[in-house]
Image (tube, rainbow, N blue to C red; front, side, top):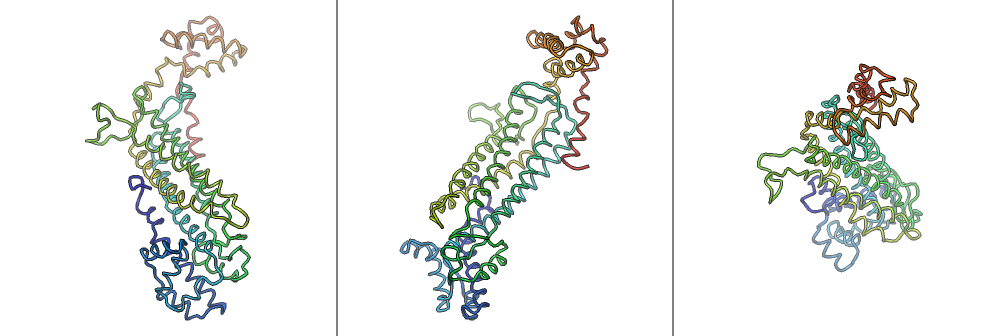
Length: 431
């Protein structure tokens, strides 16, 4: 991923230095287990820990000749360890190293993503509490529907990202497995206890049944979880983009002193962060389809998955880490305009209370069909001609035959729509 959309801590996970360090640890732990079982000399296992090292430039040089990255690594490792290196990689196959390493890297990436989600959740909770009772219009199909509060909007996003955190934690657990089982996963040339030892040392679970690789349904689950999180990011970013539109202006991204919105129009304050987040979300989601396609490998393995994962693993995790951090910062500094929200809420002359009037008329004995027609008649007049919906109702003989003017007025109480906000907040955030 290009540096513009990357943060150093996540990027470091995918650097060659970290990858080869993990490879070295896997091989060294395997040697310890082999030595404990009497398969290799204890001195050889100690030598790997004491003299084991690698040189990335040298590995690249060897790989240009061998065309095999694991062999290049093992050759370079032997150059550091010496004669004892002949006991390294006993009974193992390349995928034992590659897949176990990828599991470690994805686990490390998950730790960062879980921390990112925790920071975002903290911000969403604070902003939701801040605007718990800030009234605004709810929209369906982009059209004014009924009143809600801005805090409820944010509470909904909080609940969604809380679910995403659970998905991420589950995906991390599923991806964190180790396979040290040999050429086709039968342990023919290596004891299963070696795998158990390496798994424990690397903080992984044992893969119950591997072939030559860890089954790719695990990886598909992982990248699909990232894709769902990315979709949630885009949903929140899209909401901000809509609220920042000139005709709406209920909220907007923080616009810093000296910031410029357009090279041509000095007045512009564009939702650049939320637009950027929508784009980044597409990159993360793009990893889901190839990850799903990787599940169906030939027989015990092929390498059609390898090139895919070398690209999507760093790109998806690095991008999602950056996107979550950007979203957290954006929501932390989001500028909210309660007065504009109230103005928009009142913009249709009270039409947003139409359902309550409809229900009240049915309670007064009018059929639902007749009540709907009566309310719609007054509503469409207000919609098309402007004016006051409540006044139209009070001038309608069918309505006044059922309700007094005072009863009509009572149906326009905003508090009616917000009286269960605390109940919903208790569901989301606890008592």
